[in-house]
Length: 176
Picture 1 (tube, rainbow, N blue to C red):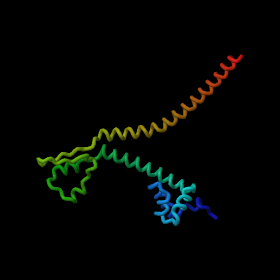
Picture 2: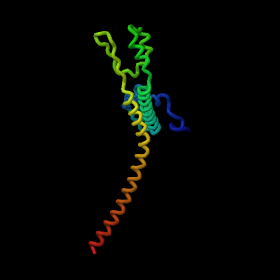
Picture 3: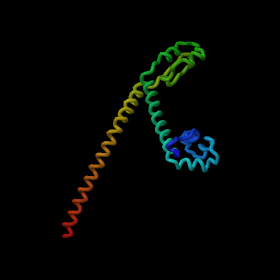
Picture 4: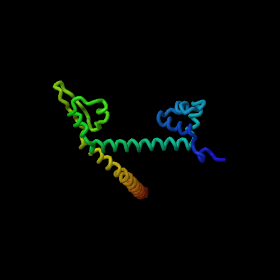
């Protein structure tokens, strides 16, 4: 007979994992996933390794997706087209359909002062490029920081071993 891990999670168990990842409340997640006795069932589901593995996978996936979406947003700010904003500025009375079709992602602010003119402020492309560069450096630095921390730990443990060995010698000499 197959155990739970070998046959995989049921659709309700997967739904529980998603709902729990959203709320952090096992009782609410079990209730919304359709389990009877949600307090007891939710708690027992969280004791299962396969359920925790799925919740962890969901968390990791979301974190990765957030980073990817943020990067895509910065790329769009840094390299995006402003032609629709210019078109809007010269269109005296744009239709609602036309407004919906405009790509105004790069626009930070639109003002229409009393004199009837229009001011359009864009997000700072240089800052977006800096954020992209920082993200790239951080990603590369993360691996080297881990390596440096690992090597530093090794060096410190060697130094501590040597210091304690030297300390032992000194104390032995003092005793004699």
